[in-house]
Image (cartoon, rainbow, N blue to C red; front, side, top):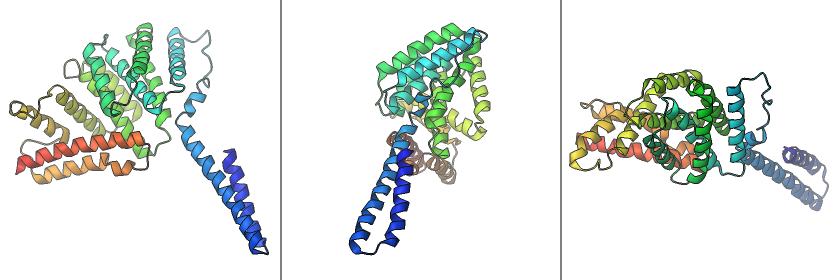
Length: 319
């Protein structure tokens, strides 16, 4: 901020003096002086942009320490969040986002009382897919480990308040993105959470359903997006559990997954398909994110390519 203000003062003063100058040499010096001010403004804006993503770490002690009157559960959650933020210091943005998503996913997995190997594998594969394999799994495993300890300490009845605290970290991380991009990141996270919930039996159990409904209400997720989250998660789940989906024996399963993703009936027309594809394209087209964080661009590009492949498969079926 100091550089922006200083640069602005220098620039304005330079412009003022430029019109007061009486010789070419004097005008040239003042012009250089003004350009220096613009440079400082640019440096200040860049520093501010780069610092935004990690600014929440500087505020890790902003909440008051829990008093003796605060419940044991609240104190446990407070120190858990504090521990997470300490772990995040010095880490890349990708590792921080991925670990927060993993932490929230572990909360979902624990909501029915136990965390299974299938759920852990679902978290790992989802994180790899979302961030193109560019995550430090040892770091994520450390975050997962302290999250498990925390959840065992607070009990099943207190998972929702805890998950909302971790969601706040996620919200702080992405709050500087444009509103539309924040929405896409929320959809990405909820889709991952839904996949984790599907990992055991291919359907959500009652405790998981309750958590999701509470989260949808808390964050005001529209029904249309809830449906998109569900369909995309089921599609990804079916793909992971049907690795040889391109062979003839699995063609029926592939068709079912594709129809579910695009919310189409088996008797769909080209008009129905194009309408569904248009919605998908508007949601994930990477051109909307060309000037955004490179990792966000990669995530949305991957999702767009995936949806495009499904569209082409369904289109070829009509020929």
